Image 1 (cartoon, rainbow, N blue to C red):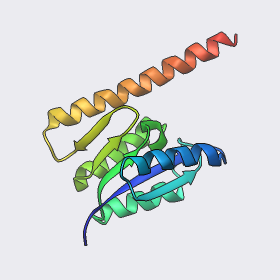
Image 2 (image 1 turned 180 degrees about the vertical axis):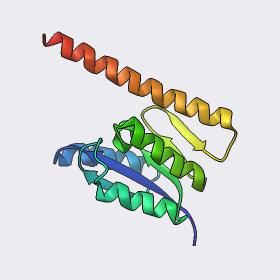
Image 3 (image 1 turned 60 degrees about the vertical axis):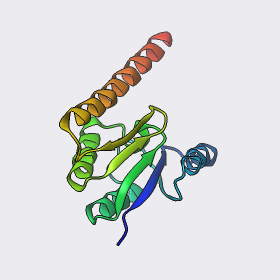
Image 4 (image 1 turned 45 degrees about the vertical axis):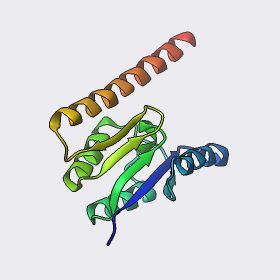
Length: 138
């Protein structure tokens, strides 16, 4: 069975326009098979994500493409679990917004560390942005 490239899109509310933008962006990046969810990024109970993970674990996926890291998950713990599964199966992850691409976890650990640093930095920036936004409302 040939491994394939799969895109993943997620919105946390039923917003067809936002979901369609993500899907269009994934298609523009050459992704033809896209799995999507309408659920919170912190939830593990996502049918689409669970299906994607099952495909990865059954060696059917070569690369996962997302528009933004937070579309995959907003939980660092869950992100770590997903990265571990991808690493174990040699699956690369391409993140369009953060310009992270061709990250194959079977490659050198220095490369993995670089990807992890970028992901952690993204979440730190997201947290700081949210804190600044919250402070502006006080």
